[in-house]
Length: 157
Image (cartoon, rainbow, N blue to C red; front, side):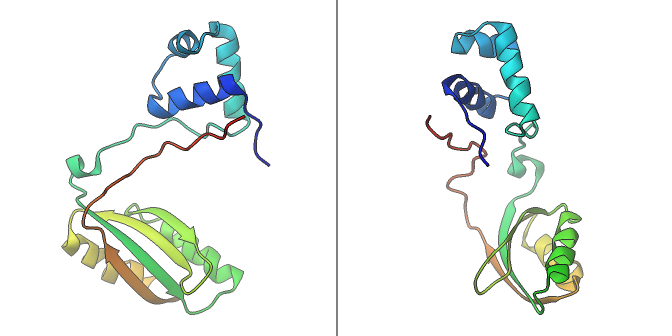
């Protein structure tokens, strides 16, 4: 069930999505709230799980992760254990940034980053294709990235 957010909550979340290192005092000043109520709101949003964690976002290309691949994976069996086992395997691979269960012709969609196509080829043959239950993998190499954001659209009250 979604958490009900008022206008002040949405302002706080919008600011934190853009700059997670803002102090409570800075947030309070920007939204016109005193520091203590602002701090309490942030704590409540954390306790309710709206704010899961605060992280530093890296530029993948500046650290040499130049290739982004989307892989569609089809399993040879579809029992709950097969899906769970595959998901656990994906959690262990640092190259896999996202893993989504799908409905349709394929079972999973992965977003993978590597240094280059050769590094992906090694990952593909040595690790991904060796996961038990994998029947088919369709890899799609992204040529360029038009939009990539972690900022979620906030529902209007």
